[in-house]
Length: 106
Image (cartoon, rainbow, N blue to C red; front, side, top):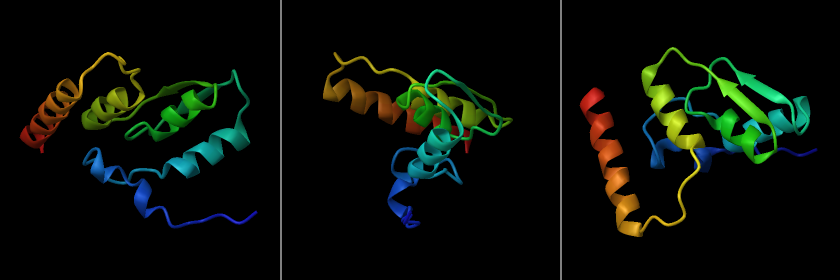
């Protein structure tokens, strides 16, 4: 199996400023290899929630924890189911509010 280890495009920097984001393909591969659909995946250092998101996409339930309150905020938004009836301007406004809130905390 050949694995592409160039994960630069998978950094969360374009979406959020959380450091040390796990590349989504790595999280997906780990969840696939070490669990089955319907299993519960626990990530004790969830960071921005990449493993939780991969688990959900792959049909697993997931629970995570992290000491960093910013990690909780980002992970919560990362795994949240979005309403499909949002307009583009509502999403842009929400994104702006999140970034303003984060810049006040950093």
